[in-house]
Image (tube, rainbow, N blue to C red; front, side, top):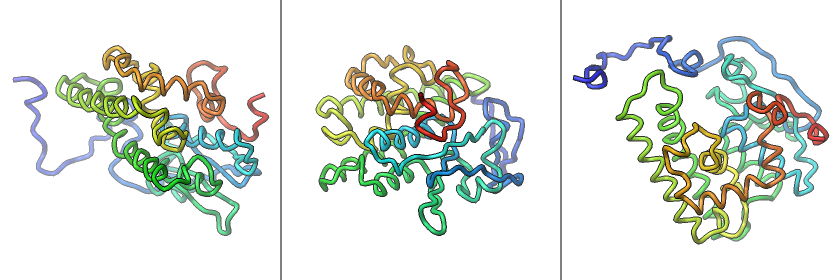
Length: 280
């Protein structure tokens, strides 16, 4: 009998805090703050507290794209939330996002300030606020929103499923990796078939749907996520690859990918960002 099949769940689940694996020290079965911590506040209306994970990068790319369009009121201050150290459980961060996940945004242009959490919600909020990167045509707008929500529902299978068991879990289990690899490839096929007839996710117009999907699936096929490009045979998804490389080349995407990043090439790191001049 294999180790996998010998496990029998307890009648009532018990939290074993040292259950191994990357990020095990920050996962817990309860919500709420663990400590008091005041968040920094910069001079701009938009205050972002985040980390350059795929979900975090969505928002910094969005903000940089807005600035690329000349929308100067999209200037923002970005502060690092180190999830490995538990910053997401600080009291003021939890006040912005009771779910203790990055990214989290405070918009001080309103009184009181507007809190926005969940990456898809932040993208939509900013798109509406600045009337940008969201199609005005009803059919294209609906298509954009469908793909935005597709990403929200699909990425947990890629990240928490495939990525976790392929890259982060302390042990390799064939059943888990096989199950989620199959789903990851199915999702890539969904994208590849759609992009065969469309330049971008909502047709010929770059939008928040592309910004949401690229940091997960685009980065995956380019080879910067989970080091799984050979395992998943990503080169076979030629339409996704074409789309991903076109987005990777955008200056705003390159800038946004650096913000709140503290690993990799030091020239591509920017723990905090307070002005467009930071990129000079």
